[in-house]
Amino acid sequence: MSSKLPSRERAIRLLRENHCPANVISHCKAVAELAVETAQMCQKKGYKVDVKLVEVGALLHDLGRAKTHSVDHVVVGAEIARVAGLPDSVLAIIRRHIGGGITPAEAQTLGWPKENYMPTSVEEKIVSYADKLIETSDRVPIERTLKKLREDKLDAAANRVQKIHEEIAQIIGV
Image 1 (cartoon, rainbow, N blue to C red):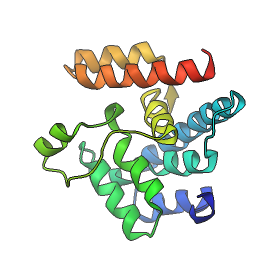
Image 2 (cartoon, rainbow, N blue to C red; image 1 turned 120 degrees about the vertical axis):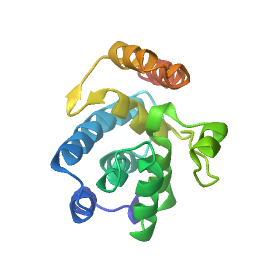
Image 3 (cartoon, helix red, strand yellow; image 1 turned 90 degrees about the horizontal axis):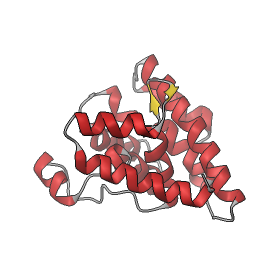
Image 4 (cartoon, rainbow, N blue to C red; image 1 turned 180 degrees about the vertical axis):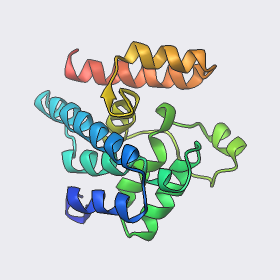
């Protein structure tokens, strides 16, 4: 799987070539750092995790923010990645990282293409989770993220993020 993945350097270059703002690139790097740490902890507990996929997926998860800062950045980013010839595993991470996932009904309401926007693989879940623990480029506690989602009346997203948190916490023993 990893052999088709771009290098870390190529992923960062792809962000720059698509004119992602510097703050988005910094955010992606911070998410990638945390996601790789999490993936490595999962590996130490005996879980099969493609750390390279996690790193590249995390670096590129906000690729769509080069064109939009709306929730649609996941659809836009996946399309940019598809055109760049990236593997489906990276497209899936980009598509499925937001808010702990987007249900089919939510995707339909948003007018998105019929796809799966819910993280299913451990790599997708790790990137989605790491993204929720990074504000700008700083790590924040999960409680802060959940509180903010609930204050924004995004209870369903908060519940999905909480579920991913519990799943990953159980794996790594935190």
